[in-house]
Length: 321
Image (cartoon, rainbow, N blue to C red; front, side, top):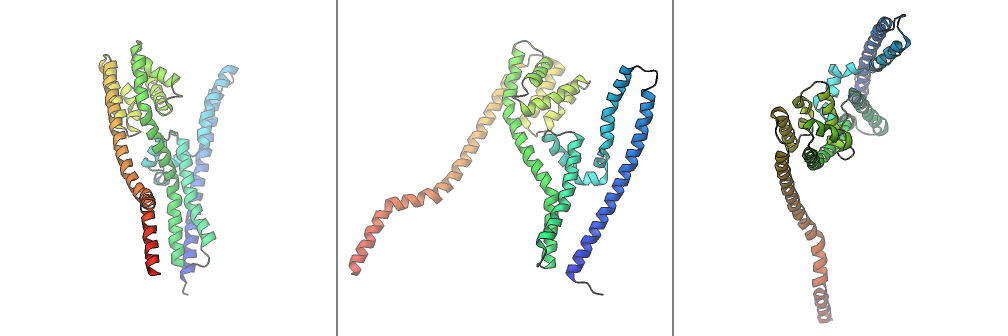
């Protein structure tokens, strides 16, 4: 029996749907087994922790401590470490999520589910709404394109938010340096200055204040200043921010006054921003020249040479008569 191209396309989509359903069934079965084992372990821990001879306060403390564990068991975070999860949420995607200020695994799991749903939803909608009356090859190309678009849309959205956040971090850097110089000038130590900037100036430094809060939390938990500021230095891909973090790490290691190095760094940063603004102005001038030639020059020609052309046409009309 010979099959037409349309029947082959439908058969391929049916096989793809069956394969996806089988994979989803395997994931659901794995998740059910994991949830069942998690409940058993949680019940055992609860029986050990909440003993009959404990007081009510210790029992309440045990219930509070078990609440985050139960919420973590309910969400399938282990999907992120599977081959399927690493294919849908690559390291580049995880970096984009971190740059957007969504560093939790919950955000990565939402990204994974959103990408999977859109990659299946777009081809389905394209096949239902557009495939009737078109050639099978065209339908197949449209389905593949819809799958690629649905797969890439979450990453494109994250890329836009991450780019805006990187731009905001670059704009906040001069204010960050000035505030640090001001706090160092009144006699505070480097740790006190960073703590105050994260606590009292987070409404002004929305991006750098958030990153500084994370760095201070890591530092208070026992990490060194170099390790705690590593995320701030590398996440936003800013050379000036990386240089500032290197300066702070050197001052924290070897000590010394930080006001003069910060002043020099601030002047260099402002000079760099001034040169960038001049470069942008030069590019805008070139672009405006094209706009002026295409829009303003015809108007000038009409205004200046229009009366002359009208007089020539009138003279030629009189001669013709």
